[in-house]
Image (tube, rainbow, N blue to C red; front, side, top):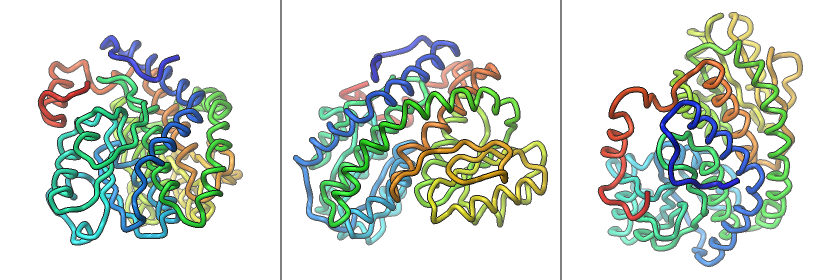
Length: 364
């Protein structure tokens, strides 16, 4: 089964079928993608220094998810910012930092602008992208081409998101310090769990989506904060479902007061350091009638619906947490007849292409 396809028919059935195919393919082939990312990263090693990660959409969320483990590996500060902030509101931190820009397509205008500006200030630039001949890869000093583009057009990105996670992780491992051997050796074992997680998630969410209602508050901290943002993105893309990502502690200060029996709280609590706060969110949401779904470990009886994941070393949870939330979005869209990306409205995708991507990109 191919990870990449040139196009897909613009119908609800065809798009969601292709989304399932990409999820299945990356679960099977993630270890090979990891080896390829490591190989390319080793060719382009930089001296460890402060690192700024930049991207848009899933590419930004991948940076949020990987930031903690990259900082542990590099042993220097790592910051994840939207490309818009890097371009329009540049921090002084950038004056003494490397910039790692993430874009699967390699044609996102704002991300390429971020690289251009950092090149102009004399900083080192690095790209994580699908192909070595993309516009982003050509603009940066060096690149990790993941080889995973997915399907251009209205297919919610899943396989390419995982590839971005692995590309960033390979960057960190190659530049890493004392923790490098432990992380590098642990990744294949974590990825080997994906096919069995997919099988369990398919059965689990086929039942759970009947109790899901909008809006969905997706809540997590640390690496799980990246996954919470990714979860909302997939619900929006696959099903047009309204969601709000929030930090564990901040949910208790804000969204808690809008939680009631017609709202769903999706809690991602895989990292042990945040587990207690995740269980507290579940308890608080349940107390006011919220519909709760928990993803992670050791939720016990506190969550009405809890999907257990295998343990991972610190910082590597995004390599497994992406999968159940992707299956959740896909299953919700299928069961409720939702049209991905709102393509039933004329001109939807053409407007995206015009406003997000550069004119005449080298690749689709």
